[in-house]
Image (cartoon, rainbow, N blue to C red; front, side):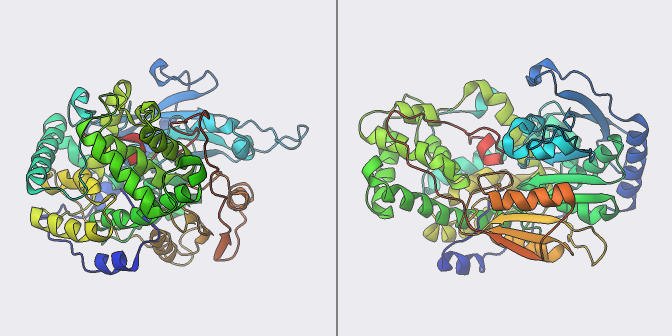
Length: 548
């Protein structure tokens, strides 16, 4: 899912006019059968626990990380039917105070983390305990990650041959022709058919409600009466579903970069809002490049930087860089700059070098990684299945064409690219659900913490405000005038202080608090390392999956 924080007034007015067409017959709302099935699965998991031991070799995790599995029903309405096994990873609490080596830190049980997606794996999360900003948490908590249903080793989904998934070079027209639209419609139909053919009737059970139920089974398997959870991006959405379904099982929850949980937004309108918001973040990036024209020589205004970007797009359409990087790969690389401002220097350097006759930085940055094709195809399959299953989508192409054509007039950077990513949902062959109206009343839920950057383009700030309104007793911490996606334990010490106080001591500020934004990145000069991806980052779908 794509989202955004701030966008132009024109974009905001336009979004208010976009409508969601009926999506045909939606699946019935979950009821007593699923509730009973969850109770059965939780009881089994509590009795069985998790037998932690060595992690599978293919996960590449070091020896101090332990792994185990937990069984969950494929279909919670049939708890005695087919079971699937979720792989879980854990690093035990160190109990070592990073500021006082003589003090033993008392344990607070497991902290379960989900990095978002849908489709991202949290199996690497326990490794984060060695990073200084996380050491206080690693002292008090067992750090627990897992691969959600459908992801990696957890009953993996696939919708097409991975060899066919990562293809480059590819096109990414800002204003597609009718012929190109027909090609993309055909591709979307084929992809939806592939998902149904490869997974069969099980496909409908990969959805956000089941992700929330799986989380409760995992809680029980870990031997906990109450859950401590941190979710980022999409992880905030099914975390909110969990809070709605199981408020009595919540100890503490952190929602980092919150998705708008309004059922009218899930997921078609959220994706339109995201496309609108990326336009503003794309402008932020170009303005930063222009401020550092002495380094990059790409223009002294955001408009001049855009002109140079378009010049590169045009050249790549006829002569792909390294034979691999076309406009589609360029778009993917620069889209990531909308998520994380620490990507800005490497993207600006690659663009500058290309225009000076050196394509190597761009090729290194944007070439499809063939060795990761299987993992990225899996990520994309899970993303598509969850979002298509979760809610009704327009089933007539005319609605998609109208809404995205209008939006592209004011927000051209990402609009059509995002539409193609989600278009298989128009032709989905599994039953749809009706999104749950997430709400908790006063006193139903312990205090929770919501984190949001005002200019986040992946999950708009309005989503955090909406979640704050819906979760009674929640506290919203805002990073002002900043747009990095996922702000917990990043470069902002103020934000990190609020998270530490909550998770370690249960302390929260008033209903809202704010932190000044972290400094913008410094420009990267020629000869400095052209990093492709910073370490210890939670993953979003658009980081983990490239478009075919």
